[in-house]
Amino acid sequence: MEKTNKLKILNDPIYGFIAIPNTLIFDIIEHPYFQRLRRVTQMGMSNLVYPGANHTRFHHAIGCLHLMQKAVQVLRSKNVLISEEESNALYIAILLHDIGHGAYSHALEHSIVSGISHEEISLLFMKALNEEFAGQLTLAIEVFEGKYHRRFLNQLITSQLDIDRLDYLKRDSFYTGVAEGNISSDRLIAMMNVVNDELVIEQKGIYSVEKFIIARRLMYWQVYLHKTGLVAENILVSVLKRAKFLASRGVTVSASKALQYFLYHPITPENFSDEILHKFSKLDDYDVLMAIKGWTDHEDFILSKLSNMLIDRKLLRIEIQDTPFSKDYITGIQKNVQNKLHLSEEELSYFVFNNTIQNQAYHTSKPIKIYTKKEALIDIATASDQLNVKALAQPVVKYFLCYPKDKF
Image 1 (cartoon, rainbow, N blue to C red):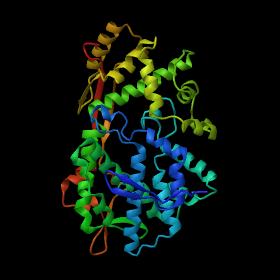
Image 2 (tube, rainbow, N blue to C red):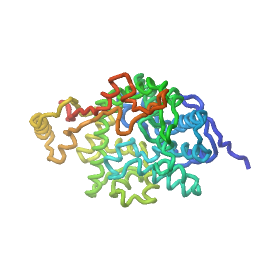
Image 3 (cartoon, helix red, strand yellow):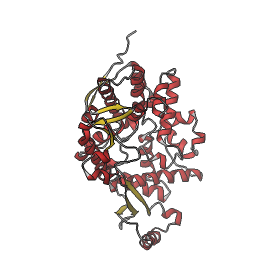
Image 4 (cartoon, helix red, strand yellow):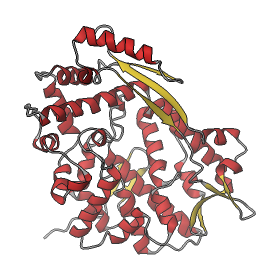
């Protein structure tokens, strides 16, 4: 019987050729749980702003695998001992770190699945795969959870300068065309080292770290928190919440089998069983988009109107400002919309709502450490001669208000 060549090479538009390091990694990538990520967009509704932003969680995960292989090579070249078992655990952990993301990334977490984050679902997927692969993911799970005794391994997976961020900033910059996010991931990885079991950046890389932090701030304001993407994301959450509300009242809400299950059943951390995990693995962007297209003609005014907004890109108006909106201003808009559309107080909340957004590019509570030529470890906020790094450690809060446009 002909054997499959599992040591494939993939062609990535960011990094060029990406090698799959071993047969176990290949088998994990081929698994249906991982293949689902081909059908989950990396940036949710951002393609309504940046038409090229159609890349997927699959793209991102493969990119992270590539960068992690580079990081291991760099650290080993600096006499950091990383065994084959540990490197493989790193590859698996970073490959699967986002496997728990639902359709349209964060939208499901705030609508039809309650109280359980994508990180928790990622861990459930990893444990399920560990059973299928006869315990070969055990060390990867320990590293992912931060339970392994070598702390720097977990920092490569999740920290303020982890492999995840090094890929998504560069990748999202490429696909949106927003050049400000184009960080030098190669340079940052080349400057990595380990001191006292802690991931650090050598002093030569300080300017690359500064650019990374600034790029993160700019990408949040220009891309991740862009006002059009923000209002579209909120409408998507409202659509799913409305559909689940109608389903709870016994109203027929047509959808794929996978989506219908989550609309008609309450999903909580307590009842998130292996069976529900398997059903979750069948749910992706295609189910949600197909359902929304169908709901444009639904008999429920709210569901159909919100669905049409997304499909036709005729979104709510959004105002963003540095100070809270006055109660009188919000009340005036609410009354106007309520009178025009004859809505109840509960129904009105789907069309008029306000909230806050926050951008904090750097957190001093989990510092990026610079390893100086005098062998000292200093927080980048102190080591940098740029005052803006300290400023970027301060959270910036803005307030937004959404409501229908005049020609509703």
